[in-house]
Length: 98
Image (cartoon, rainbow, N blue to C red; front, side, top):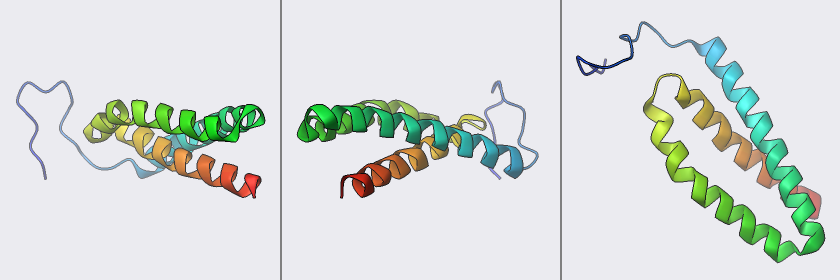
């Protein structure tokens, strides 16, 4: 078990809240997937190359900030859910484009 710094604002971990965590991750995945699909599909109507470029720029810009939060006890569920939502959103866009 990893020890926390003595002045950490978080209480020592007692266990992993799987049900609540997976629920939060699923919600984050759904919100991010819908946002990616909506943003990408509307941009693709204007110019498909622009849509791909802007989707990559947005995800590459947000990813470092979000990825830093993956070790924080509550935020890790949102991070992993958002990552799954990005993958699901891009997959849905690619399947819809084919």
